[in-house]
Image (cartoon, rainbow, N blue to C red):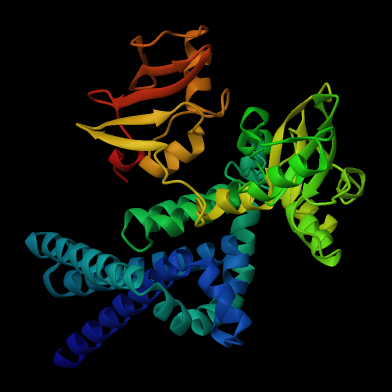
Length: 437
């Protein structure tokens, strides 16, 4: 009897270990990061290659794990029940006790414990168990294939086709979500989160959303005297200046200050003396016009291909709307780049009590990125533009409106242009960082 009890005990223990093996393998192989496994494969890790093959055929993997797990769990329970019935008969408390005991053993030692460990050490467990799992998948393939074929037949009878893949989330959205989660968990600083997110957005943002409006662009009249033209060019804080003729809408070229200085230096002239206007204007490069609907990604590629850093943005009617530079696109990715000539930035100023004084021409993307807000930018690109779009009017100074959970108050205007707004979050407004994940 002692030998029989030892046999039953060791056999049940073996079944529990096998069940734990299947549980840990299932959890680890499904929880491991695809990106991490891909990197290990590129490094030549053979176990990682096996993991990749198993994950590629998930249907077969899951079928094998479920089949093996179910089989050993049933076998362990049946063996324990059979042994108790042999000893005590088919009635009474012993059968109920052994049923409860086996349930607890299976749940604790064959399910919860191995799965908890596996999910915390997914990479280590999956790489360790992958070769054995791959062997079992191969051995049980005829059975699992038959089961899958039968299931597909049943689903087909109900009009369900599982061969069609329905991808609801794009790869870009997956990356964006991963970046945000790492930031929320403290594994990524805000600056890195913003940079990576901006790179993913390049294909969705148009140059019209980030261009410098023509009202803010410093230009030069081609009909100016040579001395005035040179003096205005070299005194500007910009390296490139649009040149117009007859009227400001007629852009005829792009003047490079460096080229003027080089030209005058070659002639050994003092700035502005004996300079010929026609000769100076001849150094202008041809203006490059692009549609305002061009995506930042396409424009970035175009800048590289054309080996230029400056383009004029036009609307659908060909009217000049503003300019965009390579630096503008880079700033969209990494944030503002200030040099020694730039004035201190007060576009967004905290005035206390959760309120901010914001320039009207600040883009909604910059505002959202700076303050971690979520104001929509589909219908307007600037803060003032959003207020005008929502109110369908041009509000006066002092008027306030509650929009998307924020209170907008017009703080300053210049004729018909809203130049400053006071923005504060309303009570109860949920921001992205307030969302529990």
